[in-house]
Image 1 (cartoon, rainbow, N blue to C red):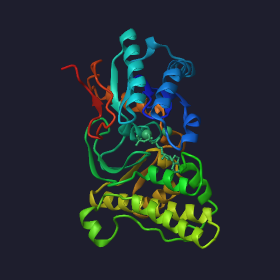
Image 2 (cartoon, helix red, strand yellow):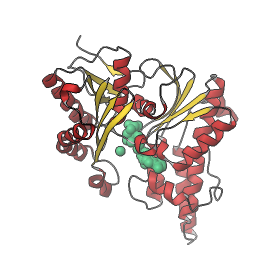
Image 3 (tube, rainbow, N blue to C red):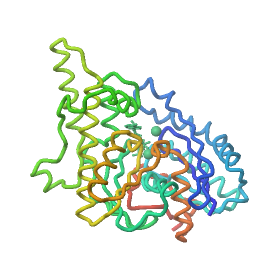
Image 4 (cartoon, protein in one colour):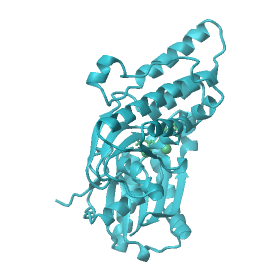
Length: 348
Ligand code: ATP
Ligand code: MG
Ligand code: FE
């Protein structure tokens, strides 16, 4: 099926077009430069930027893919989770396009879309796939039976998401927002063993109660304390070493628990998704450890890891192929939509 996908859950206005699993267009307009000086995404600024960028981005995607509305089989839009006001711009636009063109519309889950995007590069998901979702707002381990159907959450972060930890630690180190890519870069010239930062929820006792859960707020505090102590002694902060040591702690625990969960659930494939999967160390360590465990690893190319419209179109394409009924046009934007829900229905 030919599907157009619209993403507006945070600061990226994304529009993607796929035919089956072929990516035809992926246009992204980001409002990040308008938020950077505030040290975080400002919801109202993001909504206004979506309102301005939405129609031009849709037009660009149609031009790039060389298709018209008539050619399309369906439209998909992120219905949640995300910033409420930002979601509403995409959902409102998508409903209007659907009403005007008569095309079926799917209000879909952003988190499932982060995983579905990988099928554009590596094909259908096989049963026995363990998903590791690592983004700005979420960090969880998932047993994936069917991206358009059953996904079971085995564990998740009990405090900060991994992306949030990257951004907070980057701030401590004086880097601009969003800090993830800056830490990635700085760490390349750093010694990952310089400081042995804590791996959250890995002690014997925690492995009983929180076997597949993560925790990153203690790690963030440990970095802040370490930096403060250095400053108190009048020493310079070895930014590259701290970045590398922090990054190692995050990627070590992320991949260690993912491999463990895969083994304990008989999964032979590890599938990564979410913005933090753009991280070079996470990608390398996932490969290394999956290979050592005899598992296949699949991860989208970095440009498809962060928010975009292609991921939404990809999930929409799976829903059409699976004969899932489209959403009624009165579905809401749900800022806290659970991973359990693949698409919103409504109409009752
Ligand atoms: P969610 O998907 O949970 O709703 P989000 O959409 O805001 O949250 P994403 O776009 O998936 O999040 O990911 C953004 C996060 O990814 C930010 O925290 C950012 O710092 C992080 N990130 C992006 N690139 C890198 C990188 N190379 N290394 C580490 N982190 C990165
Ligand atoms: Mg973003
Ligand atoms: Fe996201």
